[in-house]
Length: 102
View 1 (cartoon, rainbow, N blue to C red):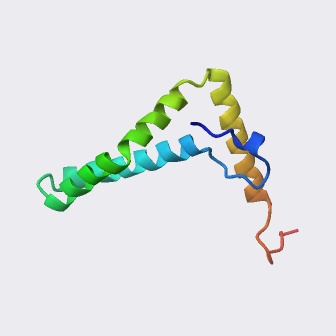
View 2 (cartoon, helix red, strand yellow):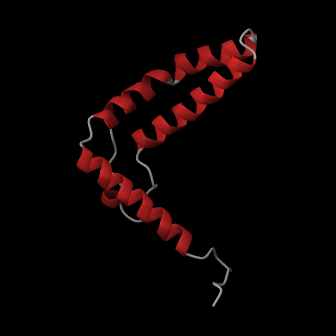
């Protein structure tokens, strides 16, 4: 299920693999839904959004989470290093038409 990390996909590939992206998106969405439930625990619309998430997205997010849990500490360190390096490189490259300050 997991796609190879960026270092194995090539320079035009996304920063995060499919499982990393799916888990991050699910965590953000669930945090938003949890906060909405805290703010208004009896809001019918929030309950519908929670149900919709669980029906449509939770199973794939859980499978991706299980994939991430199988990674060894060395694999995790390598992914963190690769992502941080890629982010630094992206920040170091000026956007089209911009000049670096000298």
